[in-house]
Amino acid sequence: MAITARALLLCCLMATLPLTGCITTQAPTPQVLTEESQSSAEVCSLPSESLSQTSMSITVNGVERQFRLSVPSSDAGTKLAIIIAFHGGGGAEEDFQQQNEFDQLGEQEKFIMAYAIAEDGRTSAEGEWFLNTAATSFEDNDFAEAIVDNLSSQYCIDQDRLYGIGYSLGSMFTYEIACQLNHRFAAVASFAGTMPVDPETCELVGGMGVLHIHGKLDYIIDYDDDWDWKDGEHEGVGTMSNVPGMIEAWSMRANCGSSDTDADFFLEHITHSDCFGGARVEHYGIEFWEHTWPDEVDGTPTYQLMWDFLSDFTN
Image (cartoon, rainbow, N blue to C red; front, top):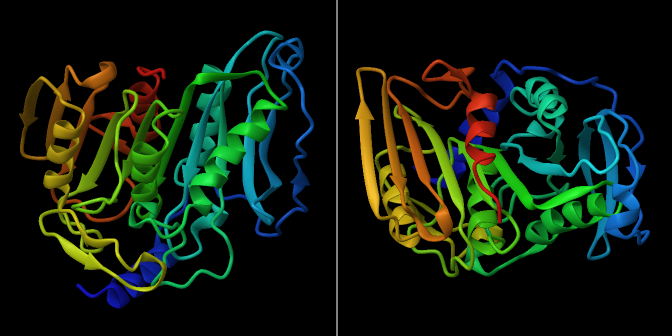
């Protein structure tokens, strides 16, 4: 399918998808996070106060970037994990699937949710998130690291527990995290994305846990077939992988030593284990399912399934 048609389909779909946990339609004035330098000991000597879906603004390479922040309450000395969520295409920055549930779980498990928002003005051909394996642009990689760095100056962060999640185009960007930032991030989990068949750069310097969930009837990000994406900022990305091929490529990249498949009429679950750095590569292929984020997978709420996977890994 041509990318123009894919982009139109994606925009239409995102406009009609039922959204969970919607925030207010009137955007609040973002709080500005500064680069005030505080040592880890200083920020860890203070408790954290709960925040929920608070708009934040930081400057990255001279450009103002925004994200929404949810922080659990915690006692002094409690180290908090960070999950950065990358939304799908079509203006989905106003909401992220199951965001209320992620926030509530973050309060229980003591992790921060940072909902990254794509930069304004990017075209449908470019996509809201730049796929940096094309070696064309690293602004979004820098944005992800800047979120971590800024939060680390404000909160007691466990630097070994940094994670990324994503939906659709945001899922594709989690593989940029996995490829380019695996020296900092420990694992990614996503739904309905893919990555280039032949990424220009994707070297593992540390273990990287990968969980990918995908509907086998997805007509936007094809499950079984490769497809080309070569327009705009993504010129040079080239052929995007079919999902089974991508999972197999990750198992080989991570040098996984064993594999197991469990399948029934509704679901296929593939697990590659004994991987480099103690990582694991898992895939859930949902039969008769399209591009809509599922409320649950194999009887477990999707947000819980993702956290259970992510929390298995440290960097």
